[in-house]
Amino acid sequence: MDRLSDTPQTAANSAATLAVDPVTMTTTTGILTIDLDAIVANWTRLKSQGVPAECAAVVKADAYGCGITPVTRALWKAGCRTFFVATLDEARAVRDVARTAVIYVLDGFFPNSGPTFAEIDCRPVIGDATEFAEWESLRKITGRQNAAAIHIDTGMNRLGFSIAEAEALLPRIHAGNHGITLVMSHLANAELLGDPMNGRQVAAFRDIASRFSGVAASLSNSSGIFLGSQFHFDVLRPGAALYGVNPTPEADTPMLPVVNLKARIAQIRQIERGQTVGYGATWTARRPTRLAIVTAGYADGYFRAAGSVDNRRGAEAVVAGKRCPIAGRISMDLLAIDITDVPPHAVRRGHMATLIGDGITVDHLAHHAGTIGYEVLTNLGRRFTRVYVGEAD
Ligand SMILES: *Cc1c(COP(=O)(O)O)cnc(C)c1O
Image (cartoon, rainbow, N blue to C red):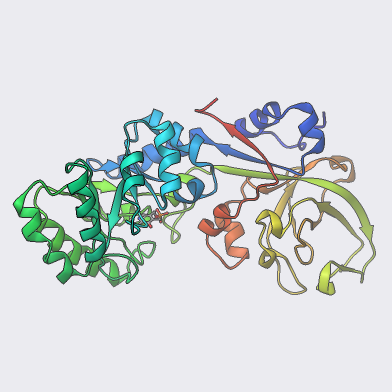
């Protein structure tokens, strides 16, 4: 078997090489390695940042593309007891591996979805009065066994009760036996440390949440955790930072990288100065150039916008330990890398190029594609061979 590259391998990468069986190793177009130990370390880091608040985990969208089942299993094993998902299907996936976890469903309570909530034993995050009334009728049927969260909008104008609507719920809260276990809101600009909206939202939330006496409160996503202890309340709700996205984009990341993506070099070709590369002929060789054609493209979630055109550099890849620029547009299944500066003996057809990892973060790639790390992660392709290292082994 070829070595993946001639660079020193990280623990995760060499474990991935071992974990892929020899036949798959010869056929796969790419290997996506997800480091569950890094996810657990990131969770522990966020938890210690927010002490004494409880640190939950947001595992919606297949745990941001990292795999809801292995990620939930690893976090459950590490001591995480509360999970947030967007949908009931996701809640079911969490329930299958975390038998007694508290599970909140962020999309809320759809009409007639009560029996499924009861069956999975998960809790809707309720954001309007009609939803609340429907959920209360379910509670009458189930003998007031089930619980829910109340979402209050403090500036997102997405889901949630207005402050005035939330105040209208207070008599029921004070009457007791209400089943409300969490009151929450969501920050719109948490990744910008100095943004005045953060202060306005935390003040509004502190005021209304304090009136839901005896009910736990939750405000902060990943970035909110780094805004200071007044943002922590009782329950933290990090998602992206668990998976290695930088929650403090104005500073160096405090998180460990989680995802490593390698794709196969299918062909190496030499072109002359003046020749162009790819669709639209957007990239022109300024010197005799060696190209590695790699088996990943926009159908694999490698954003087309990360390609390069003349006078605008695109994303980079690591080949044989060296950072190399993408040449030209990203195709559906392929991309080209300028490997002229890699010594010819160091790279051969069949080797792998690193597209994420070895110093290239999801945030870097996102930057070149004009998007955010969240979108890079949730688009990670289904064609890659997935390898999990760490906890779940
Ligand atoms: C997705 C989501 C989170 C997690 O946000 P990150 O920025 O990924 O940490 C928290 N709360 C709500 C309501 C969400 O929708």
